Each structure stands twice: as structure tokens, then as C-alpha cells.
Length: 184
Image (tube, rainbow, N blue to C red; front, top):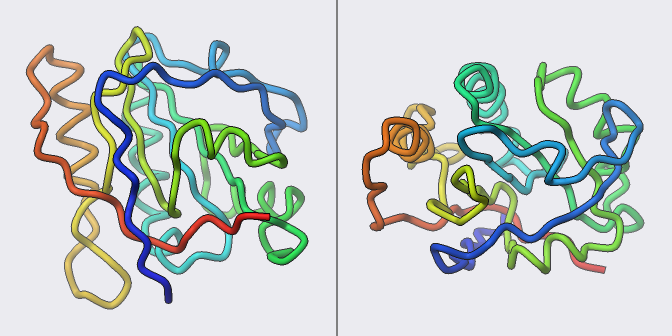
């Protein structure tokens, strides 16, 4: 299992816009349509990565809780589906249903969006404020497959709670660790 860290895009960076296929609804969706009123989480995930499989229950739970609080959630898969067919759009749709995602699961076929976000791994998390300025990037929490640390989502959860309450977000942020994005 590869252990690739996030590239840690600079805080304050504007969220790169996109218009991608939502594999759940089979329609094109843009960042502007999907952004939350109070903030937006953009996460790069995929179907087959053991790190993503490990965090799926928590990201599904966080989506349900924080979407109701005004945080938009967007999942994107940018993996090369020729060499990793288990990440194909029809299987993404199936995974979204299995995991009970309440957010879109977008397919970045050209990988341009992953490059624009400087995404490196799955999972890779980004939290933007209401103006789409980056305020958090990095890990969900310290839990990894097999390390025995409970899955809590505490790092991302704390950042979202601080954003929602108008408090300063801790700038000491740890990179996510996961499988590298499967580039073409």
C-alpha cells in the first residue's frame, strides 16, 4: 500500500473552478453550483484505495451532518480508469449508493481538476470558506488502515466547526496520507 502525502496547497488559495460529470445524477456540475453557503469541502477519493475505503463511513457521516449546517461536500475521483477499471464512473455511482453519500461523486476524466488542486493522494481533503478561499487542507484524522486509531474525522471536523463559529482555524495542519492519484 503506497503512502503518498498531500502536497498541502497554500492556505488562502482560491478554489479552482470545475465542471465535471456527477456519476450519481449523470449530469454536469460545477463548483459554483455545489459550493456551500458557509463553506465547501472538496475531497479527492476513489473506489479502490484502502485508505479511502477505511474513511468512507466517516466522510459519509460528516457529509450528512455538515451539509445541514451549510457546508457543501464534493467528492472527486481523478484516477486513470484504463489502468484502474474499478474506479470507472459506473462503479463510482455504485459506490456512492453503497456508502450512502449525500453529496456528488464527480469524475475528473482529464485529470485537470486534480492538477489544479495540486492533489496528490486519495483521500485528499480541502476546506474552503464561503468565499472559496482555502482554510484547511490535509488529513481527516490520524486513523489509517491497520493502525488501531479510531476513525473520528477530528482534524476536518475541528476545521469545519471553527469555520462555522467564526474562530481561527489552526494552521498547524497535517497532510493526508493515502494512495497516489493514478495519473495517465
